Length: 294
Image (cartoon, rainbow, N blue to C red; front, side, top):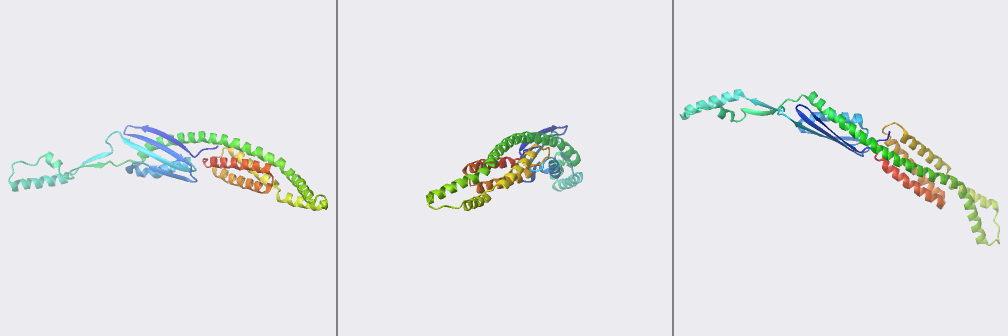
């Protein structure tokens, strides 16, 4: 099952007390790296959110945004410091007597004094909040996964086409490789005859020795076999249900490129070189696509 590492998911949840919006954005990355952004007072949710993401994603740079809006004032608690109010009142009465004032301190005056009335954040029920956040988070992850699967299918189709192009070029190379030594022998004999103008004869076994040395140096049978094997393994990964195939594919692409380079350096044939250039180009395009796969 091929999945892209890129995608986006968004979900919302509205309860009696809070509106919660969850957005998740995922990009290419070699490992799993999760960043959570949410209101500071809900910071205790961060590790639980990261753990939930880890259950669903294996690789990628993931950014999670949690927006929490309170519908009511339940997040605020009003506290009246009655002891402090009594002290203020007592001292003000004493001050009234000292100054000889007729006006006595009233409730409005007392409640307006510093720290008599405070607005404090209410104590949060962490389990309840986590439960409320978990619903949109799970839904957003599901939407993200759906997009990643859809993108993964497109990547798979593209890579399958490129695999076919590589195999076709490799088939041509496999058919032409045995002829290269024969072409070299003809070219060698022609060159020698041109230089010597048939005045001096060259022993056939000497020519055959040169051809044998050339054939050994330019033999690409092993490289062809290995490249075909890598292509078969890569094709198998494209069709398997296994998740997180990206790392295996990345390794195979490196090996495929290594064999293609060796074939190109050993072949000594312009027709084969042309096909090798095509193969390397397609491998590079596959490599770029593999970078997007989980």
